[in-house]
Length: 172
Length: 172
Image (cartoon, rainbow over all chains, first blue to last red):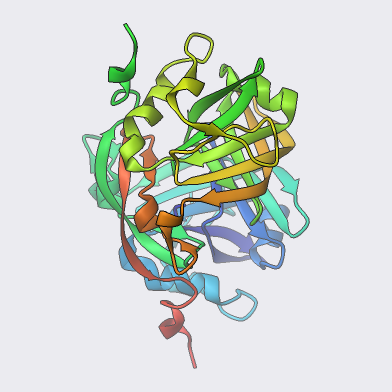
């Protein structure tokens, strides 16, 4: 799964938490599976907003760090250049090539996790990560997460076109 | 996101649909964002079961094909060697290195999508894809999906250890 930095405002200040248990719901909505122990959850519930920031591999240390320490003890807003968009309580990270600001539309309650479902209000992408006006993930260089071996991985090469490479299997 | 083949029983027969809009809820549950037009949705609702199969890059044509054609017209069960586990209505694909059989625990209703949330009842992995008893994704060779450019991508190299590489940023 892609590793993300989720931003929220807690007690009036921006904070970020590393989350790779993400999901896509429909084309305009994402989900976050967030353990209830996280400090950030309260801010998402209070404001009904959050951001999803996609760091590149150059940011792997900062990304990991945000999952190692709690914002109860450390001011994680100081780590990054923070900006805001339409939603005034969804802090985003300028150093991340992709940012999405989201409005909370539903919370699915799990025993130990809050599943926050958010509608994407706006998406931002560094121009340097576009090719022909479309996000180019070979330029974004996202950090992929594998829980089994507790490791971050790089994205590899483009393999094939979707809705295309399988056409040859169609029976006449 | 990882590209998966979702299996279900519809009208008494196994069928499969290509889904990359997946998510992780908590450590034991996954979600599927499935457009309501898909034939497979009815089987998931009727039986309360489904499977999530992770194909490897060698299966990219078959994987794409399952997203190109509807099971209304084509018997997709014939494409693969199908097996069953504990749940008798969650068909799994022997050729896929990883299979999960899931019990539907919740459906989140979106305007054009059913978000099926399933509890994983059992996971299967080809022994050839294990290293020291743990799933090794460099052996699984999953097919990653990028919607922006409608393409499948390979997984790249291992980058760093999670909950570790950022430790150096901790202040004393």
